[in-house]
Amino acid sequence: MPHGRKDFGSTPQRTGYSQVAKVAVQETTLCVKEMHGAIADKSFNVFRRIPLLCWPAQLVQAVHDSISAGVYATIHHGSGGILEAAAILERQHSSPGKPPGRFASGLHSALNGAFGDHLAASNNLLAINMAIRVHGNSVPLNTDALRSAFPEADRRLCVFVHGLGCDEHCWECTDRGEPAAACESHFGHQLQAEFACTPLYLRYNTGLPIAENCAQLAVFLEDLLTAWPQPASELLIIGHSMGGLIARGACDQAVAAGMQWPQSTRMLICLGSPHLGSPLERLGQLATTALKLSAVTRPLGNIAATRSQGIKDLRRGPGAPQTLPEPHTIAFRFLGASLAKNVEHPLSEFLGDGLVPLSSAITHEIEGDVESARIGKLGHLGLLNDTRVYRQIREWLGVLYEAETPVER
Picture: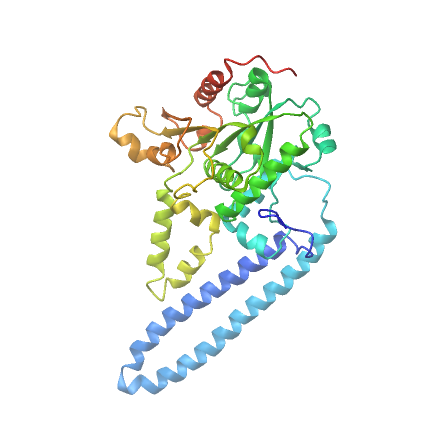
C-alpha cells in the first residue's frame, strides 16, 4: 500500500459516540479512583506512624480499600454495560446517508482534534477520513464524482486546509446580511470570482501525527489532480494554523517522492501557522509534567497526557525542512497576525495572534520564492475570514498572475 494511504475497510468499524463515552466514563472513574487512593493513603500513613493506632489503622484501611474497590468496579463495569447497549441502539438508528449539521460536524471535528489518533487506532467510526467535502458529504476522488460535485470546475483549483479541531465550515463568511458570493471575507467565493479558482474544502483528522497527515495529503493531492475534470490543472493551497504545516510538509514529501502535483502547484499560503511551534502547547507539556510529580495529581497528568499526537506535535513545529533532490518551484507566502494594533511594537511579537507568535508564523527555512506579511489587531481565528487577509491574498495572486492571460472557463 502506498505511503500515506490507509485501508479503512479491512476491519469492521466500532460504534461512535457511545464507545467514546464509555471510554471517557471509565477513564474518569479510574482517575478518581487513583486520586482517592493517593489521598487516603497519605491520611492512613499518618495514623500508621502512631504506635497505638498502627494496627487499627491498617485494619480500617483494608476495609476502606475493599469497599472503595467494589464501588469503583461497579461504576466501571456498570457504565460499560449501559453504554454498550447504547452503542447497539446507535448502530440501529444511525443514518449514514444524511450528513450532520454544522454544530454536530464541529463537535465531531473537535473530538478528532483532541483524541483523533486514538479514534483512528481503535477503528472508531468517528475517526475522520481525509476528503473534500461539499455540503457535509465527502466527494470520491474520481472524475465523474468530481464533475458532478463541481459542474463548473475551472482549470485552477484552490484547496483550503483547516486547522486543529476545525472543519470546512470555519472558512465560511461571517458578515451578516450580505450574500456569501458578494462577501469579501469569504475567500473561496472571492477567488472564484476574481481568479477563476474553484474552491475545494478539505476535512481531515487533526488529531493524527502531523507527519502522518502530511503523507496522507501528499497522496491525496496526487490523486485529486489526476482525477480532476479539467486537464493541465494548476493548484493553489491555503492552510490555516496546523493546516499550513501539513500542506508545507506534504509539499516536501511529494517532491522527495517524485510526485507530479508540486509541479502544478503555483502557491502555498500559510495563515498563522506555528512553524517554530506553539508556546501554548509547550506550556501544556510543562503543566502535564508538573501534575505527574505528585501522587495525588498524577492521575490528572495522565489524563492531560492523553491529548492527541497532533496537538503534541505543535509543541516544536515541523522542524528543519527535508533535504530535497530538487528545489521547490512553489511560491510560499506566510501571513502572521498580532492582537496589538502596531505590528512593529515589541509587545506585538509577545502577544502574537493569541495562539501563535508573529515570529513563529512568518519564520521559515525555505529557499526560493518566499514572502511574508503581518497584520495587526487580529486574532488567530480572525485569519480565516478577515477582509484584510483576503486583500493580502489577492495582492499575492495578482502579482503571480499579472503576466498571464485570463483563464478560460
